[in-house]
Length: 100
Image (tube, rainbow, N blue to C red; front, side, top):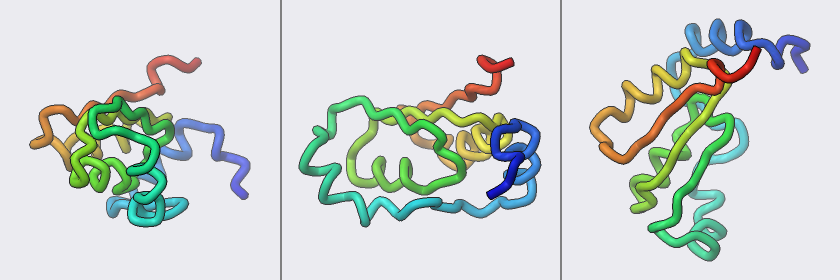
């Protein structure tokens, strides 16, 4: 495990180099049964530490359209916002502005 995971600069540099989406845990399909069972399509969903994951895109494609993402890295938030700019209800923000 990297001792730099807690630094914004680590994540900004990593996401500047890794331009393809990456899912740390699993793709949405792995969790879909749980999501469908416990969440309504009208629910507002917050993805904390979204990174470059395709999870939100896959939620959106499954008609869960009220999804917000936050991440430590403003670099990855910019990438995600550009990747999903056509989705009008796809919200993105960076927590980097809120931490010292």
